[in-house]
Amino acid sequence: GLALVGLPVFISALGFTGAGIAAGSIAAKMMSAAAIANGGGVAAGSTVAVLQSIGAAGLSLGAKVGLTAALSSAGAAAGAEL
Image (cartoon, rainbow, N blue to C red; front, side):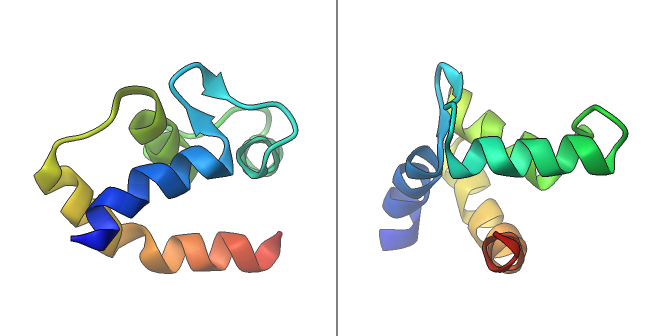
């Protein structure tokens, strides 16, 4: 339960907002790294793209449950690199 409430708050705190990726945020650094790795663009379905979708539009409860499990290790890896 806490993860479902905390996940959108955490994603927003990283800089993935309804208005886009906040300048100077961790999200901006993640997006920059993803774009460099992909030759200038962020790949559809990548961690950055999924997090931006959550921040911009929000997701259903079921989707949040699935993403919480799926992105936990990816988020830890991304955080370790920064």
